[in-house]
Structure formats: C-alpha cells, structure tokens
Image 1 (cartoon, chains in turn red, orange):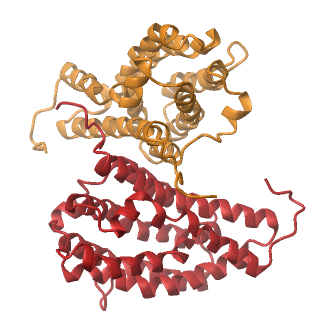
Image 2 (image 1 turned 45 degrees about the vertical axis):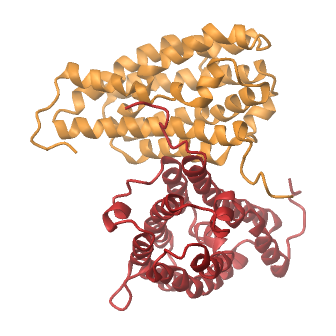
Image 3 (image 1 turned 180 degrees about the vertical axis):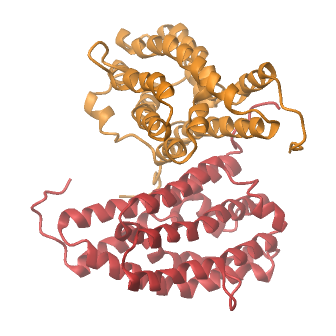
Length: 243
Length: 243
C-alpha cells in the first residue's frame, strides 16, 4: 500500500484519480452491458427496475443519516435538497415516484413494485450496507461515498439514447426519472466533490477516500451480481428447493 | 398472509415449524452440495474457507451487540459463553483460531486468511446485515435469529464424514473446528430455542419469528451465492475489467 510519507496528491490529481474509478462502475457489469445492448428480455428488465427500486427508497434514508450526523447548518441546508428531490415536495412528485412510473412503464403494477416482493436478499444487503455506512461514519466520509454520481450522467444518457430502439414497448413515462437525474446528479456531484476535495488532505486520507469510493462501487456491482445470478443464470435464492 | 386472529401455534408446533425451515438451509445451496460431493477443486474450497472466515470473526461482534442490548443479567451470563467460545480464553484458543487452522489445513497461510483479501463484497454485505440486525433489534429477536444453529450439527457432521475421502489433502487440524461446533451448537441452540419459544406468543409474533429466521437463512444463502458467482461461474467482481 501507500507509504504514509508519500506526498499528498494535488486537488486536480486527486479529482482525476476519483474520476478514474469509473473503470469499476456498474456500467461495465454484464447485466448493464446486456441491458444497454438491448439483450434483456422483459422479465430481466423488470427485475432490474423492481430491485433498483429498493435502492431508490433507501437513498433518502441514507441522506437523512448524513444530515443526522452533520453539525454544519450550511451543509445540511444544501444536502437536504437530495431528500426533497427523492421524496418529492409540493412542486415535484419526486424521484421515488418517477421510479414507480418507470416500473409501470415496463409493465409492472404499482403494488408489485412498492411491495418489494421482487427484491433479492443480495440486493437488500448491498443497499443496506450503504445506508449503514452513512449511519455509522463521519458525515464527510458518508457524503463523499455518494461520488459514484460522477459517473451517473453517462449511464442515464445511454438509457435515454438506446432504450427507445431496443425496448420500444417501454412507455414514455419511463424516461422521466433518467432525464430528472441527468440535471440533478450534475448539481449534486459538484457539492459532493467540493466536500471531498476539502476534507481529505494528506495522502493517507486521500487513499482512504479511494477505498470509500471502491466500497460504494462494490455496493452497485454486488446489486448487479445478485440480479445476474437470479435472472440471467436463473438461480434466484432457493431456486432448487421444491416448496 | 396470516389473519391476526389466527390462533397461536402450540410450543411444539412452533418448534416444529422452525425446524421445518431447514429446507432453506445453505446445506442445499449448489456450492455446499458440490462441496459435500467432493466436486470442489482446491481453489474453490479455499475460497469458501477464506470467505467464511469473515462470518467467523463477525459472530462475536454480533453476540456482543446482543449483550449490549440485553438488560437481563442471567441471559447475558449464559450468552457470553458464545463470545468466549469464538474469541478463546486461557483454556481454549477459540473457534476463530480453529478456523484459521482450517484455512492452513486447506493450504493457505495465516496472513492470507486474516488479511481478508479473498472476502467478496457480497459475502461482507450479507454478514454485516446479520451484525446490524443484532445491533438494531430487540435482543430477543437478535438472539432468536441465531436459530439456524438448529441445522448446523448435520452440516458439520457431513464434513467430518465426507471430506477425508473427497479431499484427502486436507490436513487433520482442519477438522478441529467442525468437531468443536458439533457439541457447542447443540448446547447453544437449547438456550436460543428456549428464549424464542418463551418470547413469541401470539400467532402474529410467531409469524414474525419465521420471517426473522428466513432473514438469517437469506444471509447464509447469499454468502454462498456470492461464492458461486465468483468461484464456480468465474465472475468475481470486476472480472471483466482490464487493470
């Protein structure tokens, strides 16, 4: 590993190294590659939407934990926008509702999505690990773990570009979420990046932040792994148990 | 689901239904079936031992969380034995050390095991979910979630019976852990079962306990899923990323 006497990276190099972690982003996971190439069947696409819904409903809990651990009023006043964006407010039904619309646009009922009946244990455990990290960590570390948002605009744009051709049966309302996040993620990431570049100053601290970002990438990759085993390999939990 | 007016199960029927959950035990997971049939290669057996080590070192943390939430001195005085069994005491090097011996008996170095370098994110998230359940739940619920121990003696006995034939290269010291747990698990499960049968009295509470046991079974199954994808399907995290 690093020698603790190594010189700290400059602000620019640190930011570049964080951006370089895109190589581990779930955009490269076979499940997402198949999705982007139009090779998922309807059930496999629904499986992703239904499981990812658990991530969507957990994000405001994650952000509320960051608020709960953050004594800095100015940071809270900015960060709270993320909760409003997901849960909704009088002018916006919110990101969770937009995800329900996506679920219905791919052919599920609201009840089927919100009941969490399709959520795989492996997905639940990975998402809960992210929420627990926010609950138990210093708020700067929790805030900086959200920086996979650096890579999100590209994956959303890909879906907007390729789904209409590959999955023409997906209804238009399904695209609201991806468009919404294109602008929100760009704004959120500026704030998250500023907190991160300010907070980790020594080389040892900067390396620690690389590990935190890797942890968050592990969360996303593991979610896709559980879906791959369940819906591509046809081995969901207890698949071989006669009931 | 159940009607909340349904009559509670008798103590005997409740115990029988808990035992019936054995059908979801990881003894039926393809990874364990292959292991028991002698069909794992050395690397696949090592992968299981190295990953399961993370479970072993987390169990005393899980039990310490139960102690930390339990105001009943008599229960603590019995439950603490589990921590002593795993961490060791002057008369016993303990279960974690016995697991390290198993790791060395299957051909790894102590450093390779204790560094956690082989632990897969999916295994880590599943095990952490169990520890977090103990941290955040009523202590009776946390204690009762350990009842997969009902099913453990059979899986340990299988290993003692079949490994010497299937994996003759495994050194003798590897069997200490399994033999140790054969007697400990039988004693622990009596206490865990007593707490459980006393605590859940209404049908609704009993059904809740079935869900808790299912959660713990999900933890074990998900651990095996992550190992299956990594070592049988040859798709460990980031397997397709050139570094």
